[in-house]
Image (cartoon, rainbow, N blue to C red; front, side, top):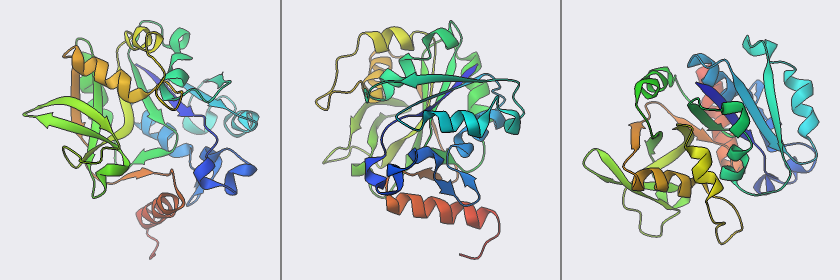
Length: 242
């Protein structure tokens, strides 16, 4: 299975910090934010990884990672997203890299406690389709939320006013190679982007979506509050009394 880490965007909610660097290079305790999602893929046994980024600081990732030696990789692959076209547009840039393989996609500002190794192994033997991760949250209106019926996800609603559940969709997704055909046929949303929620809902429409409920904490560093929380969570993991 291939791995794709998405680290584009302007990080406008984190200005002025992101006026001088990419959001994903900001520190979370003792490492750059982007280290954590990459380590999640490596710990799950994925060694063939592409980083998709954009903006004026893209070269900083090459200086930081080189060929991925810090993660035990023999090579790190890179792609550049020219425009702010959304998560699905960024994923589409990995089409040639992924080929006919399955792919695990993780957002560069998302990371989790523990491992997703078992879920990756389960998806490798899943005949086709996609798998997402859900996490119960107190503020579902701030996320994409899964509507569940029995053991199936029947719909994902982006930032709903009346959430059908408290299960947010975590920024880790696994797809078969048909994801790129789905991306090619998406229409832009009202904000002019190709949305990953639309990709996931297409797999649900096809009856090809499975899910896992994530154990442990989940960090999403999209705001100052979330960035602070992430630093505290990781610091406590390292034994700091904070």
